[in-house]
Amino acid sequence: MRSLFVAATLLLALTSWAQSLKVGDPAPALRVAKWVKGQPVPQFEKGKVYVVEFWATWCGPCRQTIPHLTQLAQKYKDKVTIIGVSVWERVDENNPNAHIQRVEKFVSDMGDKMNYVVAVDSAEGGVAKAWMEAAGQDGIPTAFVVDQQKRIVWIGHPMENLDEVLEQVIAGKFDWKAEAERQQRQREQMEAIQKDFTEFMQLMQQRKYEDALKKLDTMIAEYTEFPTLKIVRYQTLLRVDEQRAYAYALQLAQNDFKDDAQMLNQIAWMIVDDATNPPLKSPDYQTAITIARRAAELTKEQDASILDTLAYAYFKHGDVQNALKYQKVAVELIEKDASMDEATKKEIRERYEKFKKAAEGKKE
Image (cartoon, rainbow, N blue to C red; front, side):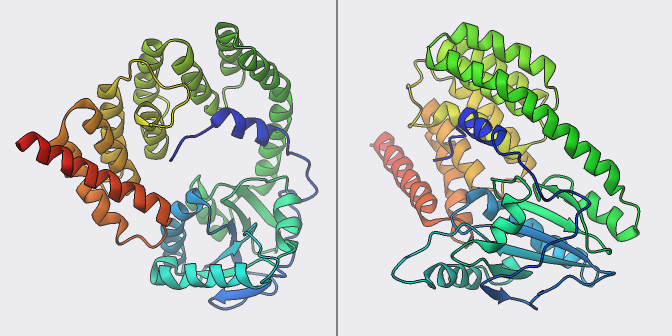
């Protein structure tokens, strides 16, 4: 359901850094197929600030950013225009408008929960090519901030520092030249890490797990700006030595990712996930509970996916009552969440029914 496949994802990211659109460049026009919601923005106006965020209806992480973007649109009303452009939608050759209709329905179902300007790219993907591909970005969601001079001053994940960036851009204090230099350094480091990561993947394919771990430890020490490597190490340990993996998971949860609810959720989920391949031999469900509880606390028990993880960890640990308690809340939350895909909702509902049956069986 929510497995990270971090190694493959990171390797993909390392191979896509060719850029013709950078921080400091003029923002390209938004030649979209259709403006779905809000006032169209066919061209950027001098003196105004914009956030152009790229997303898709099929993208789970994109759905998680929608409430945040709506909050930003409300917070910076009349100061910043938030634009969500749907890209890379599945195209139906028999119905060239199918992807547009899909986005329209999604936006309609979201209602005020998605309360900012929304557009959809053409079937040919012209906007995605002019922005995402030109900027060397192959993952969504990705946001671009356009300043009062109609230039791109920031590119990144919409949940990472976007609030702080907007505050500075609005005040005219954002140092876009320093940001351009920072992103250039990051690109150079990504190019350097690519060779090392390829060697790590080769060792994994050869099942030389201890050698792969040694390679990872060297990389973690050298590439300190890439904490994702520590998740790769955790995944590798799960295959090499589960007990070391669980100890490392707690270490990550107490230090590197102690305030990152989504990452904590992924760490815990990898212990309870039925689809883990190869299956874990001695899953430490108490560790999963400890980590998932921290994620639930950070989100004030209002994130259905996190509560689903916590509930499943309790269930597998033998605590059916707590499993039912949290899964019930998860089900209540998903019924109000138009952004969550139906497949995930179905899994959460089915788990709730499974827990109820188990509870009834215990009573008998």
